Image (cartoon, rainbow over all chains, first blue to last red; front, top):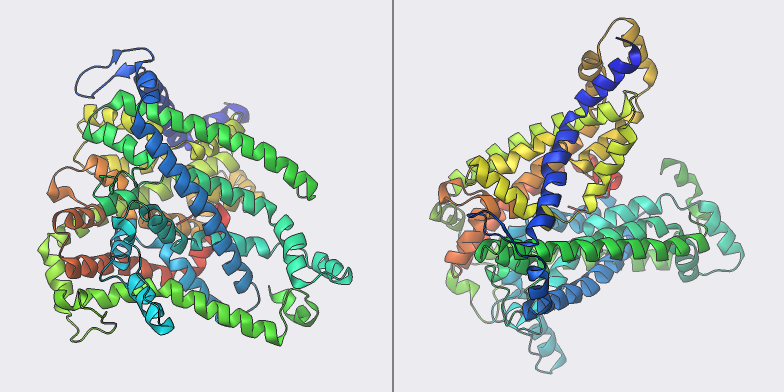
Length: 301
Length: 287
């Protein structure tokens, strides 16, 4: 056997976990899910083809729009807020402070707390009567001499999504670490050149740091939006899977999960999943197109 | 980092004395905000129910009710859930490290056509939302009779995770080729080179993969939620969420168990900080 054939054989053997894994856990289920999305399917009985019926039902489904709205609301608030927080923390930590490891640990830890534990914790923190957050609001009110009443948080349809945004911002430490690594790569000379040109600290941050961090910012934004579009576990744990109050935490993935595993409308769930996939795919492409130009303009190819 | 030390004075991004005060003030403020939920978790976990609901709020628990931990833990069979969780987490760790390192080796150390295509495809799957494959995989595991067993939770980890392959690939590429060429001349097979030369050199990267796989399995909620039915098969995450559903009013126990479930992760992080941060930085993986 010549070296080329031996390499091909060895390559295929070594990579076989990925090849088999892709076939069984990605290619097959993706195709099957596309097929099921045109079917009436309950898992218990064989799927029956129903054409576009699921997609038609989806267009007329008010919960589809409600969950889409909730998810969009959450994404639009949580991703920018988390990014700004993470970026600010990274810039602070980059100022060569003492106790870097200490601060980094405190900011990072929330992002690895088991999601069920952090959901229980935040439900308790935001308890309208006995939670810490409203106690602090109350204390501030008394200090200022005006009665301040904290909101109902997870018990109120208006405040439930902001509650979850707060919780997700607490977990922004994972992004902070990425930004912190990126800050090490900004060339020193650029700051010096900017200083000679008379730029202040704010100017440097905006005209040097941010453009040079473009790659990291784009990466975090894309991953953040993809993650937010699949937001699920905290809403499930905190509401017991109901999406209450008044459907205000019925996020897209939660609704999809309900359709699949509470009502066993598996075909409908697959149609929902494919709509989500299409939105993410098109959104990411458009985003890369737009930011590709942004990167060109800033000289960060 | 080290090379920069001498240049601190001329570094225009380093704040002056007044700026440093502001930086520290902000750092302490943010630290207080980020640490406050942990404070609230631990102090609430050792309060009596009536202290939990007291108005005005009781900041420092008095008395400290340590027995909440023991009572909360035995309120549901959490010891059993712990054993189930460890079983899944250990198998997932082994599976992820073995399979991902094999694939990373095949992608970086063996020249064969198609390896680029495989790598790009693998990376592409990271953008695929899990909801798309959720239903067919569930149907598949139903047909295999794997629902309500641990198999759906750990068997897939033996088929290489894209993130882990990506992380290991970068590391394997940095290992000099001369090493394996010399071994080939001595008649060593690819298996020997993989196991005797590359794997020992890649220990830090393998540790990172193992750590992520373990924590991922420990924290996983959606997998057990879909596949586990019988209470005897619950993992800690699932058991805790069901505890919250059924006994939502037992806040002192709920918070005590939440604390206990979080502590191992925090301890693990403290001992492996460097490995951890490097790994996150390399993959961009978020918690």
